[in-house]
Image (cartoon, rainbow, N blue to C red; front, side, top):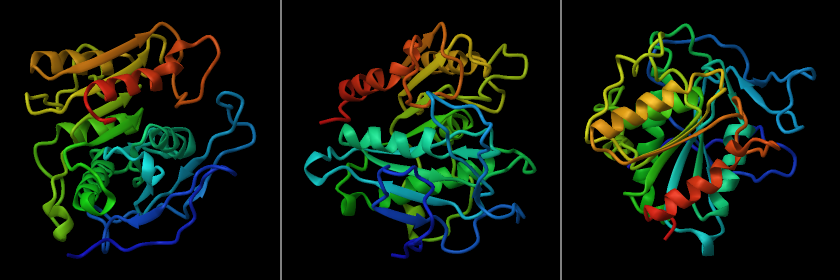
Length: 295
């Protein structure tokens, strides 16, 4: 079976952060979709940018070569579950540590193998803007499932977790009824459907008027169970999470929705004093355990 190439590329993680056990180039050649000239991949965070919980974040820009960064727990702590993590960034950048590598460390702490997806950005010149990131997400899900035996994973416990625009990517990958690209090798023989989806302050799921789910999002009984978190005062309307939850309920798909009065947007896993929304990882851990993902 053909496998994606392994790369030794720079991983933008903070000093002292966990390092990936493997970095995998997703596509064996040119990724699907239109050619894009995006410039050199770089952390574009400026000194004057807003701090999150008193710390800077990594804004990874100009990603042309998508990768899967694999973080595995200690061998005696692995429970066989895996989660593909989609950082947010408005389809312009990736909040690489805040909503990526730090989330992988949390997943590892509860025994879950984490795969941080470095998907293509920016995609604002592509219509629809979510297409290339969803292609990268579907490819990653197939990749992880194709290597389940090698990595000691249960092939029916491979989920996806996304923040903001990454939440849109995760939701669209979860709801997709087809692969959004032509299969390229044996890796794509494995299913690209996640077994659960965790959407943390997801964006773009509601229509422009915030009166209903976006028209191109169709929720059926085959959608996976979902866990959703939003703050009432988020600048990204909470209707994204609300209408997704209502659609799941109407289709008979189990879902858990948490809406908090304060918290805003873009906190990742970093605790912010006075904002209980940042306790969502504990709630998510309980949800995962209750559904058999932490056995």
